[in-house]
Image (cartoon, rainbow, N blue to C red; front, side):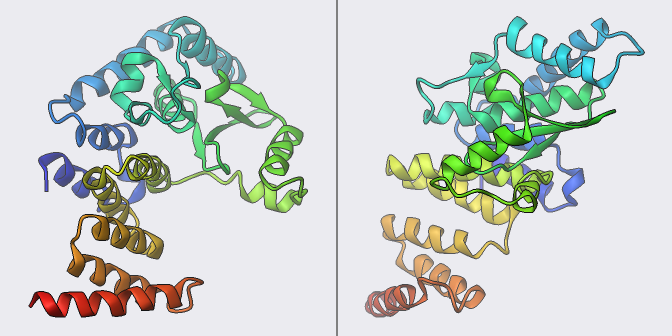
Length: 279
């Protein structure tokens, strides 16, 4: 285990509210760039927030604070979505997003959360389907914002339209839509970031990097059965047959009635035969 991975594991072993979200995200990036100075980038976030905070009136309303944050991040600093290279792994690395001012919904949201909280806004992440969002309580209600769209405020109707588009026109109930707007924990935010990386690495068949991302997901969420199955597939691609067998077995122990249980049992039988010949 690398020093970065050890530091990450120590952090996520504690309570969720003790996880430093920006630090953890930078430690994920440090797996790719071993020379990355995590503390330097944390200081840059501090400096950005301090610059904005000096400009704010002491009696500023939270709604005006949101407007000021949007103008600062997106108009002045120039943070924006990287639509042209959406699946570039750099868009999932917080240091790269800070340097390049380009990112995907979750990394732009992460910066929004970190700067927002530093200036006193109680910003929270939302693991909305297919597109990470943030929300912030104001005097007259909670506003849902899209950092990928320069902090645009999203109405309930717009959120419903987005869900319909993902569900082939199926109309979500109000209760179902409200459930999608529940605040995400730090572990959920980091897990989503890591799953993005896992998908990118797997698509490019960079199996060792995909394995590192999956290991971190499991350290975050050891009860997530599907991650053991996915790691087993990665181990298969790396020809680590015993490790793959162990993870497939762990998956079935956690989800014995899984939809793919029969397929996994067949794979276990194949791997037992392979590993017996390796003894």
